[in-house]
Amino acid sequence: ILLGRRLRTHSRTSQDRIADIGAMAVEVFSAMKIVQAFGQERREAQRFADAVTRSFAAAKRRILLRALLTALFITLIFGAITLLLW
Image (cartoon, rainbow, N blue to C red; front, side, top):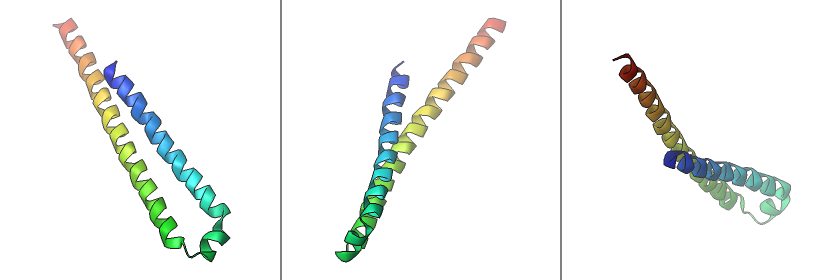
């Protein structure tokens, strides 16, 4: 239950980070002429790279928790089958 709750929290965080990337892309693309007019391409590129890095870190945490949860369930199921057959 505890791992499931943590996994749900991290999944939500990961999805929020991906949504942030999409929102940022829409924001910059819709104001492309303004970004170019003020010469802010590098700043926007760095901001996007930072958002992608945060999203990747959140996804790695989510994947690690999901892998641990899957390994735990497999171990418990095979342990129960072994105990039952023994």
